[in-house]
Length: 228
Image 1 (tube, rainbow, N blue to C red):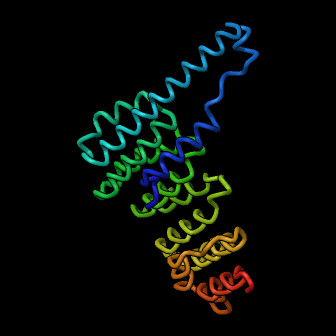
Image 2 (cartoon, rainbow, N blue to C red; image 1 turned 60 degrees about the horizontal axis):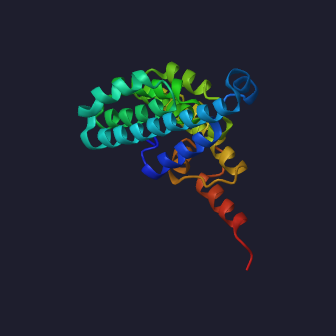
Image 3 (tube, rainbow, N blue to C red; image 1 turned 180 degrees about the horizontal axis):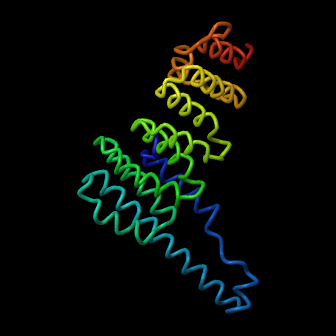
C-alpha cells in the first residue's frame, strides 16, 4: 500500500504543504495588534516553530522505521501534541508499521488520525488505505462509506479501483466490473498509464462486448506514440 513511505516523497510533500499553507496571519489584523515589527517577529516565530515540528517529525519517522512499535510511545506523545499535518504524516508511518505486522485494527486508528488531521496532504491517501483495511476486515459498508467521503477529484481513479476491489470481495461481480471500468476510463481521460494490475482486475470480470484492458492499453500507447 502506498502510504508515503518513500523518504523523498515525504520531503517533497512537506515542502509542497509548507508552501501552500504556512502563510502569515492577515496583515491588517496583525498590524492592528502589533505593528509592522510585530508582523516580522511573528513570521519569524512561526517559521521557527514549523521548522522544529518538521524536524521532530522526520526524527520520529526514522525511529519508527528503525525500531518499529518500540518507538510508538514517543510517537504517540507527539501525535497528542500535533493534531496537524506533521502528526498525520507520522501516523501514516506508524500505520504502515502495524500493517506490515498484520495488526490491522490498530493500524486503522492511526490511518483515521491521518485522514482527520492531515488536510489535503494526507486525507485522500489515508482514506484509500482505510477503505482497504475496512474491506479486508469484512466491513464492506464502512469501506464504501469511506470512499464516498473522498471528494478530491485527483484520486477518483484510485477510489474507483479500490471500490471495485471491495465490491468483488463482497461478491458483487457486476458492481466490481463497473468500478474497474470507471477506473480505466478515468485513467484514459487523464492520459495516465493503466497499471497491469488494474488491467488484470478488469479482465477478470470482463463481460460480453467489453474490450479487454490490455487492448485498451495497447491502443493508448499507440495513440501517444510520436510519429517518426
